[in-house]
Length: 313
Image (cartoon, rainbow, N blue to C red; front, side, top):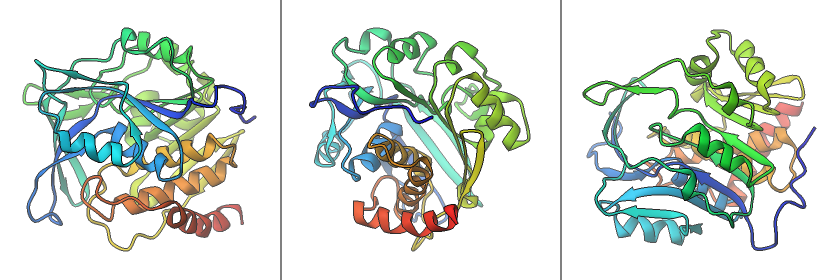
C-alpha cells in the first residue's frame, strides 16, 4: 500500500529533507585527467536531483571551516535550502579520496565532520519525506528515532553505517544490523554490497525480502551498470539502466537515483515510475565529474519514459 503524503505538512513545508554529511571528494579515475576536490555527499546529489524535478528540498548537515563559499552559492543556485546546515569553526568537512580502477571503487577517509545529534533536528521541521544518508557513521539510532517523529515517510541509505575505517582511513564493509533502526524505515535504498552487509544474505532477492520483513514498504538495490532491483507489495522488479551519452564518473549516481525517486514519490507517482525516474537521473550524473551534470526535468522524464515502457511491458 502506498503511503499517503497528501496531508502531511503545511504549504510551506519541504518535500524532501536529506540528513547526512556533505563531503569534499577528490576523485581519481583513468577518465579524469586532473583530479581535483569537488563537492559531494548525499545532501548534494539527492537534493539537486530532486530539485531538478521541482521538489522543495532542504538538508540537515554539518561542515567545517574548509567548506567553500562557492559550494554554498552553487547549492543555493540549484534551489537547495541550507537553513539546516551548521558550520563548525574548529572542524573539517568530511573528505574522501575516491579512486576507481576498472570501475571498482576504493575510498579513503581523510577527515570527518562532527556527528549529527538529535538536537540538530528542529522541533519545527515539517517534511513529506526524510532521507537519512550517513556516509561515515554520523547518524545514530537516536537521531533516526527523532527523524521518525517528523515525517510519515522515512527513507534510509545505510552506506555510512556499514563502513569501517582502518588507521589510514581505508574503507571496507562490516556487518551492521539494527532492528530498532530498520523497524522505523519505510523506504530502504542500498547498493548490492551494502544490503548484503546489513542482512548477511548473498542472494539479492533474499536480502531484499529480509529488509522488507523489518518494516520497509519499498526496498531498492542499485547495481551500477546492471540497473536496479525494486521490491514492492511482495513483487520484484528489474529496472534497467538508462543509456548515458558518456560515462565519466559514477560518483553520486545512487544518491541521484534516490533523490529523483523520492521527488516523484512525494507527488504520488507510481512506484515503478519513481524507480525509472531514479535510473534516468543517475544516467545524467555519470556524464560529468562529481555533481557537474544533472538532467533537467524534461530530460529526466524523457529517459525515464523509455525504460518505464520496458519495465511495465
